[in-house]
Length: 589
Image (cartoon, rainbow, N blue to C red; front, top):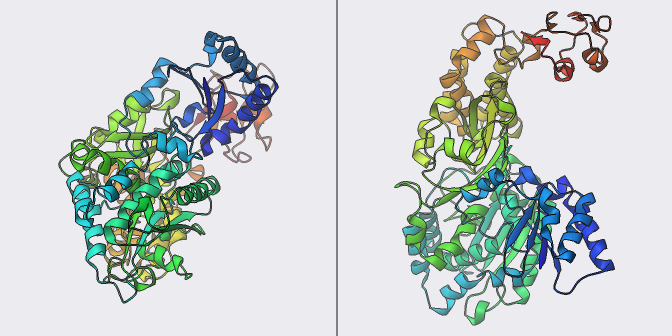
């Protein structure tokens, strides 16, 4: 019997470390024969963490959720007695099981299943069979790239460019007398609400290594580099161990699997600049310079890292490669749509009932992901919009919920696939404030190299600042539109070119909210502090004093069991009173 504790970042943040420690202490005192205690990464059900999986000897799985350290004794008793019904109260519900049941997992195939710190576990689950196939059967570089081409794999980190095209370009690029080429992984995941790459590295680092090895072989690179955010310490720790173990077993280094192919892999921890998600800015950072985009052409395939031919893909792209080589490009292409093949991983966050990681075939609708898998909006509220593609994407409204997940279809809404962040919003979200939030992020993250991005985003942010504080002016919407298109046309890199997207989609789908802010000095969602006021409905107030006790400035007065009132001159609009009131007496207008 095996007891596996989910120890991705989400699980550890929820208390999985304490659960593991408690279980370890109990089994140290008395460990029945055949019971194994281990770890795994995030399986994607972040909303149920900490998760403990109990596997019987015949493979039967009992998934225990929201486990706390105090539950360790119950789990121990259930396992040692052989009566797993003792832990029934911790079992996952049938409704929550649908979160995984409705997914198709390729990039996430091992996450939450294997021990990310064990190369033997990876090998036992088919690991390194794909690179062995490439080398043992004598597949040529073109044979490998052809399978990626047949699969229709497009980059999973942003614009969705053809992976096979990029690999061919790097392979065909003429190297200098040293013959040096580089293969790079962009793990600089900087979008607010995105955590797909982190989860893959934490939960299945060897799949990244294997995918990169295959990519390196196909372009003729002898050195591979993973550029990862320094804010991902657990991912770095596990990847570092995986690199050491793979090197020791002969899957990295000289003469891999006894072949003539040699490749090393190292980690570069980045300082966390969003612009370094752009491939040429990432290369600049790798070279020890400030992360700023280069003019293209030349493209990295011709002159990349140290001006040598280089290829860059993100973590999720590489995580698909070994599966494609092992099962064939046709199997991957059989999933998805005409323009978008395979599966895509999304990070569900925001006002969603079941937040976490989701992997679905391309062609799945947004409605199926948000409501079918994510369980819809929490607290019974109404769905309003979903932000796709992070700061580079756009807000897609409820009227577009049946849009299918496809690069072209999502682009038609004004959003982008991006790396896969899905931030879900309900009717309490102010779309103007949300657009301002993302623009504030991109304005701060702009490297400042080009004028349109450096100054244009600042001017847009100033207009939005005025609007959300009730100082909007007639013509502000038109000014925003003019600035948006000027920045898109004039910015040097993808950060600037896509920075206006959240604002443009807000104007396109939620223009009425912008007009209410400007013309009526009113926030329809009741979120912008300067545009709202709090009052108490005397017909609903029973004088329980809960609101008064929570008011930090003493703005609420009234006798016990008598209706209370709020002094608008003192009220700081913190919202504590509304949260405290159980009778709906506190009103926001």
